[in-house]
Amino acid sequence: ELLNKWAASSPEYSKDIMIRAAEYAVDAVEVFSNLMTMEENDLNERKYSEGLYWMGLNFATLCRLGGGGKWSTQQAYDVANSSLSDCQKLRVTAPDERRAEVIFAQGVLCFCKAEAVLSGFLRSTKMDKEQLVERKYMQALQLFEHANQLWTGVYGEKHLETVKAITMIGTLLHRLQGAQAGMEWYRKELKIREELQGEMHPRTQQARRMYTSLLDAKLQAERRAGAPHNQAGVVRGGSSASQSQISAAAAAAGVAGPSSAPSPMAVDGQAPNPPPAFPK
Image (cartoon, rainbow, N blue to C red; front, side, top):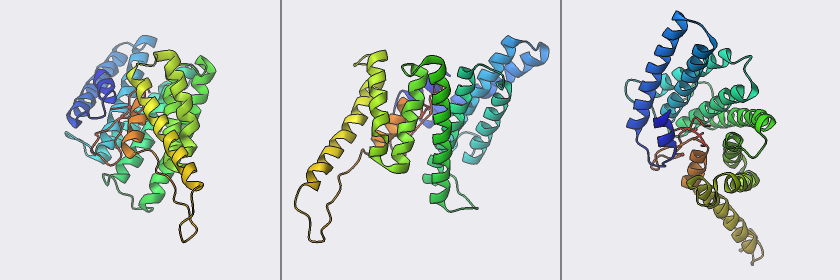
């Protein structure tokens, strides 16, 4: 958990950190599984489910990075998928806030798979690359929206758990529909972080940079729209936020990734740049 959050707090964490985080997660799940075998009670079950949750997040991020250590990209995805599936079964009757954690993590896994496909770490034999990426982004968006609904019902909108989902909803809408589609969610994230974490907090500053860059791009596009048209009668649109800025926004949700990667992100289990995991 500590290595995951450390990686998610930096846009340039190393793959070695996530490999170690994955190894620790495997060890933790084994220990908690043995405790469950010796004495099955609520405390041991809770620890076991938390171990599975972090195992899912850490291996999802490892998938996003192209695998590492003794795990290939596909193996990392399979471990993450299996862990989160087992965790979900243990939390079927859990309170909404704990069910939302698993749903959020499943969204992170869908997001990380899409990013891995984009980076060429995973390939699809059943559909073309663009279709698969869009499908996984759509699945991730639906899961983040569900997590947001549950967390909002428990904590309200102004809470650090809820804001993780808000961050990732903005990121996914940006990916799927363009910068302006995610702008309202980025603005909402910024306002919540300013109130809860203060204006100088690194997460707040990152949210402000992302929102400001999109706002500037929108204003520039509007100014150009009022300028003379080119000979073809087409007004050239403004540029949106850079890939690194989008990735950093996801990192704020808990999903981070190396700045050199095409679409960096890791997933901070608080959630993950919930991008090595999603928002904190």
